[in-house]
Length: 89
Image 1 (spheres, one colour):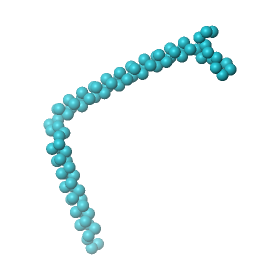
Image 2 (spheres, rainbow, N blue to C red; image 1 turned 180 degrees about the vertical axis):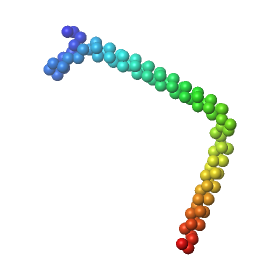
Image 3 (cartoon, rainbow, N blue to C red; image 1 turned 135 degrees about the horizontal axis):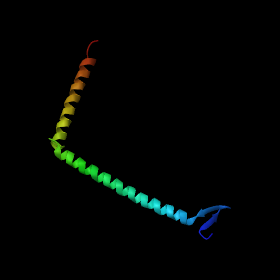
Image 4 (spheres, helix red, strand yellow; image 1 turned 60 degrees about the vertical axis):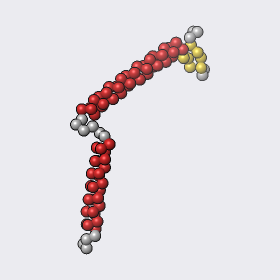
């Protein structure tokens, strides 16, 4: 048995089977990475077309408006809290 290597008193490894498994594992990993890249490309393309189809795409002005709304809501909440806790109850 020229293809088998003896290790640890009787533990034999078939080197050709081991090499074949390693090759197939490498091929599978490469196919998996290629598939993942294709999925990422499809999702990125879909995301770009979705953003383009929006009535108002996300811009700096939209972010500024959302920040202003958040500040107004925060101020209203703070004022309501102060009014409630400053009452003589």
